[in-house]
Image (cartoon, rainbow, N blue to C red):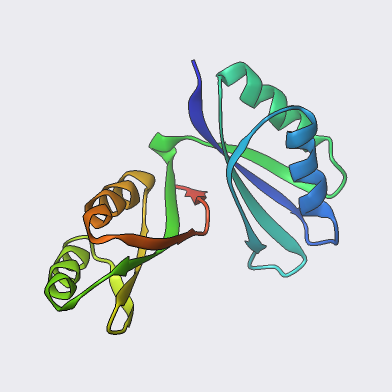
Length: 159
């Protein structure tokens, strides 16, 4: 059964590492749903979070292949019950005077932040899990979504 999996990769912060890792996925025919990367508490290392669909056998194979790459120090599968996942999303929505207050109220319920307002649009910043972001986007569709920008999933193990 194809399910969503999240892989956390610790790698040396060297030029080309991200390209080699993402290239491994594409060469093997695995589609990446989202990818995020950034330096860790030690600037010599980066943490790369990859979200993809696949069965357990495929994910295990990917883990072994990524572990063999030069500059990769650790590969961890982040399971939903022992990890925290979040994504950042900006949503720009059409907003006349009537819609503006409704959008502000909905954003408040979702603990989203209104980060830009003008006469025609409102831009909302939201951080949350995929279900929360999806639900908010569905509520914004009737107002007219102009643009959505997402960072991709990031995660960390609990404890």
